Amino acid sequence: MRPASRRLTPVHSQPKRRRRRLVVVAATISLVLGLFGVGVFALFGGLDATVSERASGPGTQTVRVDLVDAAVGFDVTPDELVVGHGAHVMLEVANKGQEPHDLVVPGGPRTKTLSPGQSQRLDLGVVTTRTPPRLWCTLPGHKGAGMVLDLRVVAS
Image (tube, rainbow, N blue to C red; front, top):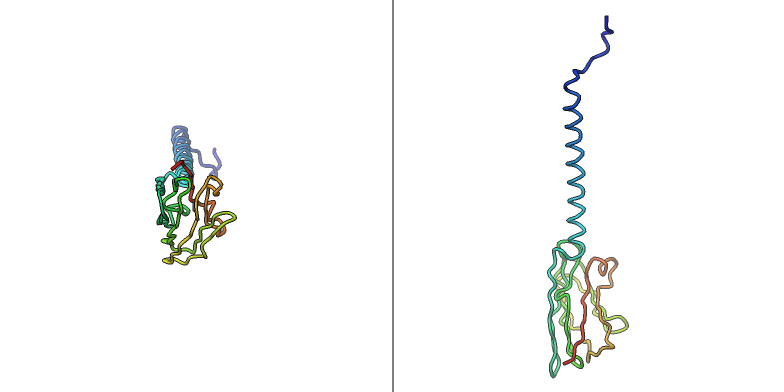
């Protein structure tokens, strides 16, 4: 006689359990990898189209620059400013995000920390190839999260 405390599982149900467990594990791994992939894609600009603006010509060129909270991280719009060598450039910087932001030229002019809705003019002066090629927000983590404006100087 068999002991009453021991239950025997039919042999034909064991492969079904094993198969079901494998399907659940595979689905979980696929979901985790998919979410990770979307996060990496978004973090490296996948959800952000690069917007370029051009400023050149005689006189002072005024360009509007918006500091915004993006789907993932932060953004500066336009992302790139193409400037004719020797152009005098004035940025009209507006914080369109929900957090404080600023914009700085390394070793040069900077805005104050702008609260949401505030704006300030930032005079870059006459732009040459010696002008730093990148401006960014100096608040902790903002530059790394994408709050960067690339400056490309071209022949006028």
